[in-house]
Image (cartoon, rainbow, N blue to C red):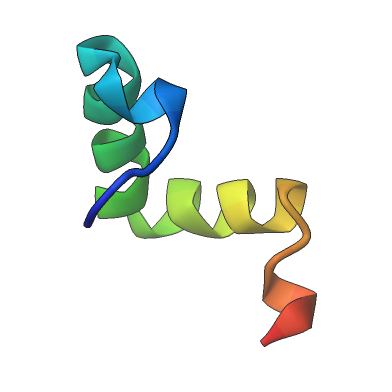
Length: 40
């Protein structure tokens, strides 16, 4: 996954985001918080 923008260059942010996206439950929670699930 390519992260574009200033946060993509912060290793801790990239690592945490990859951890969240790798966990099915956490990914679903993150998508709900970002309201992305309803936009599919």
